[in-house]
Image 1: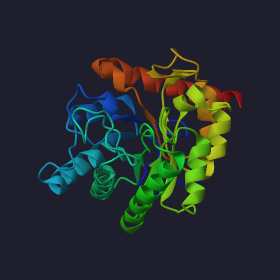
Image 2: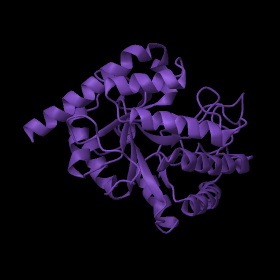
Image 3: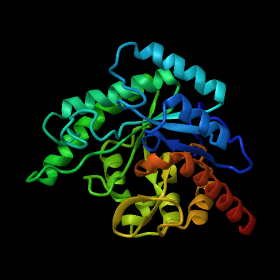
Image 4: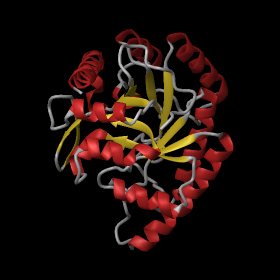
Amino acid sequence: MTAPARFRPSRAIGKLNYGYVSNGLTGHRLEDALRMLSDCGYDGIALTLDHVHFDPDAPGMRSRAASLRRLLDQLKLSCVVETGARFALDARRKHHPTLLSEGRERRVRQLTRAIDVAVELEAPVVSLWSGAVPTGMEPGTAWDRLLEGVARVVAHAERREVRLGFEPEPGMFVERLVDFETLDRRLGGPDALGLTLDLGHCVCLEPEPVEVCVRRGAGRLVHVHVEDMVRGVHEHLMFGDGELDVAAALGALVDVEYEGLVAVELSRHAHAAHETVPQAIEVLRSRESEEVTTS
């Protein structure tokens, strides 16, 4: 698949573009975090919209976005917008409301606002997910609510010429590739709707090996998260602490000619980002080179 035009080519030897999700950089000012990523050889950032780094509803969004865009250009970094901040909409309930729950209008508004921020940042992709099924809700009702909400977000994305990367997430209504495929089919396969594939999630709960998942999702793939994980446990781990075959996963991404960001997601390691940021890209570059050498 050809990536959106606003992604930059990799600055390092290799064929993949590496980024870092900003939810793992919350101990750093955004400007400092960006300079650290650039110094370590990353190609971009997956920017989580939250109160820490970029609040989309704070005054002066467009001027703040313009300033950030200038710094990204200066550092030659690409950007993807993430919408997974835990308490962005409700200070007492994690990830609430969702596209399925009461108050879902607020989630739709948050996602359309994220698309507007992406336009200002020249970010080609906004990543999102479904949320968990509320207690007692029938699957048919969950599907009706999800389809209605996503259709509205897709329509806004089409108007603003931004791609959506829908992420299957363990414990949520859309938690596996087959669920995303059902969503995509029931919406009619809109061009604006793509797939965010988390390689650790594949290890956690997909029935197929991660490289098979990559090839299966390649036709809709617009964004990738990467971290280590073990089977059956949704905990983001540093590479080497889980069961992810990093070389096989990256090799599959190269094989399908994926050109978007491969963004490290280590939200629980923010206190040690000064160590995990350089360590993570060292592992990724070495495993990519290893796979290219042996293939």
